[in-house]
Structures are given as structure tokens and as C-alpha cells.
Length: 87
Image (cartoon, rainbow, N blue to C red; front, side, top):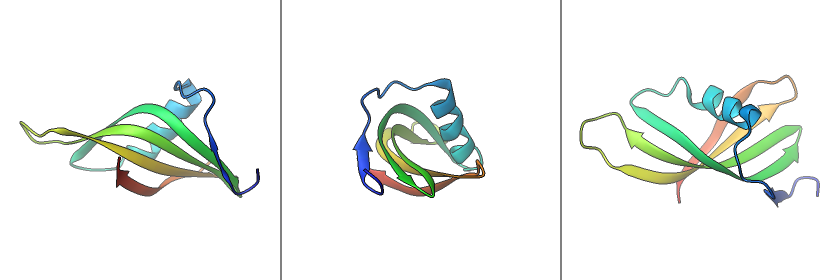
């Protein structure tokens, strides 16, 4: 469905999906994100991805938090974060 979110039939992370997530989060400072699985995709002028991930502040003793990271990959291959929300 165009513009609607589609639940992932195969949430396992492919190398391509891991790369998209890593590019989107590589410049974030002070926080580490570890992707768990792909939740949904949405076809727009490019593709939106909702990833389930663990977030941890880079600080001794900090606890992990489960979050949903929404990433946009445009038609030129550029990747950016649209949203990060608690699970």
C-alpha cells in the first residue's frame, strides 16, 4: 500500500538494513544504538524504516533502553533519522 506502513514479514537484519541503520546513527555522539530488528517499512519518495533498537548513553553504569528509530532513505541513497521514540 502506497504511503501506508507495512509490517515486516522478515524482521531479521540483512546487511543492507544494518548498513542503513549504521549510516543513520553513526554521527550521534554520546549515545550508542544497537539495532535488533526491522519492524515496518513505508514507501514514500524513498523508503521509511522503523527499527527496534537498544539505546545506551555512553556513560559507565548507564542502562539500555528499547527504542523505535525511524529512518528515511531518499531516492538518491541519502539516509537520515526522522524520529527516535521509547518503545
